[in-house]
Image: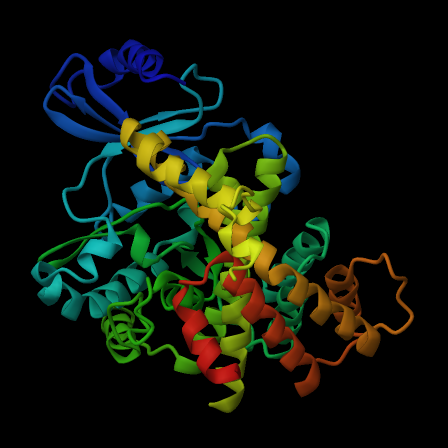
Length: 337
Length: 132
């Protein structure tokens, strides 16, 4: 969709729905931001208020056969989870409008723009953020504990409880559906099945809580973004995901997202939840996160083959090799620990 | 006396050099004239050419490694079979035990694949130091 068309459609709809809540009478400066392989992200201004539009560029039908818990959440459900999180102390943007698939804009939602730095390559290295980096692992632990405490009864019905067994089954199904192309991913799944921790109670997980989805300022955590992979599962899953090698941006010596240490993450989590997750279980979920990243890469390849996506999506399919490398490295580390 | 070949001016262009020429065109001519998503994708496209180039160099070694693995773990495989796929399926059926020898093969294979797809990925340096 061109920026002009989208601007017109937004104006048609927002003049009514935002009346009385946000000052302004038209959209200006609509620009598509780069990145974001699943959903489009647009920046715009309403009156004087900067806003962000998240939009799914393809219809849900066209990817139906590829859906699992990887692309499964609709933007409508994502918006309702963000609204639930906004009632906690977790920093999230305000939701201003939600459009369903029948709307001319397509499936989308409009949210507030939180000022802050979102580009990890900047805030992971820039001296301005040194103080922020020192506090961030603890703050992430706190934020995750608060997300995990959200009442599951209020969740959209599509975000149901699950078991490890079902997760393994889904992963196996996807490996088969994608042509069994990776012996390492299959070995990784077998290993995860054989070393599974005992079944823990389900909590609401952010599901994509990683360095690239955090917004920071000099004081630390300013925003938790991208809730599209939200699902239920054991608490340690979110912690392990944040520590996955692939999201450390090359800073492998800082296991928590490339900026922090395990102890601070666990201490932050303990301070808000009253219990300390086990490091070995967190590390188990790092391996699971590597497998999941590999499956995301395969999904991107499959989506590209079905005509959805540009050269970036085709290229992401090749990043499967990062996941494979990490699966082998992490299993070795686990067994030598 | 100078040999004939030393005097010749090169007139052929290898596929690897062609890739280099297209990469240069993308980075120096196309990229600066674009903005936003298209500029981002032009950079991705230049990186993709790098993958193709490295696959041309390392692909044969990868195929040789897989062929050797097939003889060890899937001795009855037909010659036109997709080796990684058959290994994956054997693993899924728990027909192959991932012992040290099998894992060493996967590691050697993965070093090549990482070298093709993303040589700058941080874990690769760790793996190279540990496994080579």
